Each structure stands twice: as structure tokens, then as C-alpha cells.
Amino acid sequence: MAELTEKKLLDVDEALNLNGKTVKSYYKEFMNPALANLLSMLNFDKKFIKAKGVEVWDENGNKYLDFLGGYGALNFGHNPDYIIEAVKKVQELPNILQASINSLAACLAYNLSLITPGNLNNCFFGNSGAEAVEGALKLSRAVTGNEKFIYCEGSFHGKTFGALSVTGRSKYQKPFKPLIPQCQSIPYGNLELLEEALKSKDVAAFIVEPIQGEGGIIVPPEGYLKKARELCTKYGALLIIDEIQTGLGRTGKMFACEWENVVPDVLCLAKSLGGSIMPIGAFITTSEYWKKAYGTAESSTLHTSTFGGNTWACAAGIAALNQLVDNDLSGQALEKGNYLLEKLSEIKNKYHIVQDVRGKGLMIGIEFKENTGSLSKLTGGLSDKLSKEYIGAMIAGELMNKHKIITAYTLNNPNVIRIEPPLIVEYNHLDTLVDALEESLARNNNFMKIAWSSSKTILKSLVRK
Image (cartoon, rainbow, N blue to C red):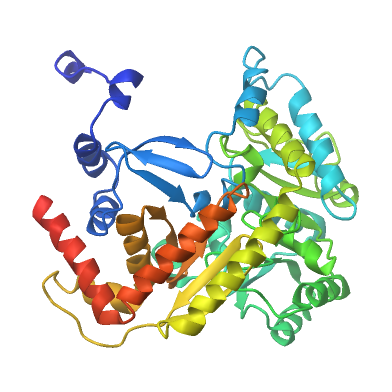
């Protein structure tokens, strides 16, 4: 406390007026220095000062198109007026008051019961996707009495201990082992190995994404989810479908599991459930399973959350679901996604560096071929690593720095860039993306050119330091 006599606490106005250089220095000193350096290497450390819809502006007045969309959290775009107005309507209500029943939470749960598939009925609200997954895992153990979880290689369900234990990339798991025991991974899309893992009948749940997001926008074989549903029922395991990224219209259906008319036992939601402005996560299950896990006075408080179901977040959620339904954003996502996939497929056929284009609706991945050549050592070997393992990051850097289009690579497959704009994206925005990508590939249709371009960005960044 003695230091506060010499150093004044910053207020919000002062925080807003900090220039980008100062923000970067604070981030490096007080948050995550290594991440700040990595972002600086690709010139991804800009200070953005304004955002609306699909557009954002940096401190130098440059306008960008956001095709990253908060990893699926911005289905409604940046700062949507109708969501903000809904939150303003409740600003004088108690936001966090545990000694009562929250009417906004009850109404959001009712609305979710109407739009989710089948007989899903009872909700629990938390603050994030990882929390939704944690709750779903706990419920499945309470319902079945079993301990084991089956998950897929390449999956991503979060980085808290339970969610991380069923996330399919060892890079994220290894530093924190031992994780939750009795978690087994199997290849995504492989029904034979799924059945083999379920046959022991000691599995609490199989958790799966309808489309793997961080795995590289991987669409499973047709019929995969439907058969997985049958196998889980046959062997007494719950089916948890993680719709945190795919849900709420993203793939052209309200929920991606509806493409195969599959009803899970537990469905996980988050990201855009908060209307693109509020943090909220949820899992929803059947009345039968809820009662089995939490149906008595004694068990009703076994799983709780201080901020879960708060008034402001639930108001945003209610407005978000109404916006989805009233404006058929799912249908818009399907039409716009089909349009974009066709354009991107044409690019794939023209440029050998593009390995694949895939996805559904406005959840699209562009995979680039991995480089095996050697590059300049001017950046201490970093450009070599980038060109071999992070070609997607390098393309994303080209799009950001030369064309003012924001994208990013997928965490479990860095050679894939994700295209996940807000569902309100306009066709002229889609055309701008296609033109920018075509121009970048026409100029840099080989690894050496892309790596050299990125290396120049890295060197400039190093010089600035």
C-alpha cells in the first residue's frame, strides 16, 4: 500500500486514453510477456478503439473487417444495439442476489427449452464454455454413477481441469498432469473405436463437438452423430454435445446436431448466448436427468455459481435468442456460408498452397499445405517454425496487415485459418474477404514468399523493440 502514495491507480478514463505503446508495455510487464511478444511478431498487437457490427477501428483510424468473430462469440456482431438496449432495461434491478429466484434466468431457461432439440428442459447457467462443460461432466457422473469419459482427438472443450481432461491436444494437457482420471481419447469420426470404448458399460459420458472448431473445422462423416447417439443409448452412457462454438445459428441450423436430428442428453452452450457482449455459459439436460442429479433439497446446491445466471447476462441472452429467431439468422448463415464456400472452393482449385476448404454455414476452415523447406535464420529460427507449423498464422498476418481483415488459425491445427464472421455479415464483406485472399495467394503462392513477407513483419517488430 505504501507504493500507492507514489503511484496513482488508473481510472477508466485514463485507461481508455492510453496509447498502444503503453498498453503493450503494461501487458508485457503485468500480464503475459511471451504472448505479447508472439502477437508483436505478426503485428497482431494493434490497439482497437471502436467496433460496430462486422467492423472495428484501430487508434490510427484504420477500419478492419472482423472475420474471426470472437471464435464464434460474436454471432450478432460487435456492440449490437438491441442487446445493449435489453441490458439497459434491467440496469436498476439487482444483478447478483442469491437469496431469491431470478426472473430473467428463469425466462432464459424457458426460452432455451423451446429452441433446443427434443426434450431438453433444465438449465444451469455459468459464465463460460469451460464452466458449461464442467457442469455437464459432473452431471453425467451423478446420473450414471460411472466415472469414465470418452472424448475425441483434436477436440477442444476448455482449459479448466475437467474440460482440459477431455480436450484432445497433449500440448495443453502435459504441463498440468495428472488430470482427471478415467478419460480416454479416440479418433474423431471413428464409430468402431467409440463402440469398443463404450462396451465396458462403465462410461459416464461421451463428449463431442458436432464440428471440431479448434481441431481445424473438421466436419465428421455423415451419420456419425446419429450413430454415436445410438451407441451411447445402447451402452448406458450419456451423450454430451458441445455446441459452444457451433450453436445458435453458426452452421445454418439453430444447433449443429440438428443436421442429423440428434438429441443429446446434455447440450453445452456459451459464446454468443451472451448476445456478443456478456459472458454466459449454460448446459441443458432432460428433467429426468436433472432430477436424478440435483432433484432433492440436499443435492440441489451441489453445483452452483456466484455470477451464473446474473440479471444482465440473462437479459442479453433473452434478447439474443429473440434476435436469432425473429431474423432467421440460422438461415442467413446457411445462405451466406454456401455462397462463401463456393467462392473459396474456386480459390482452392487455383492455388496449390490451399490444401482444403470445409465447413458448414459461417463456420469455415481454410487449410494450407505444410512447408518442409528451410527458411531464413534472421529471426532466430522463428520464421522456420512459423512456416512449418503456423502457415495459417502467416496467412492471417497477411490478411490483417495488408488487407485489414481479421482472422486467426485454429488452436489444434495451426495450418488452418478459421472464417467465423458475425452472422449479420453482408455479401459485400464476403466478397472483400475473397478478393483479399485471392490477391494474397496470387502474390505469395508459395511458402518462401509468404515466409519472407512474414519474416519482414517479424524483423520490423524486432526493430521496433
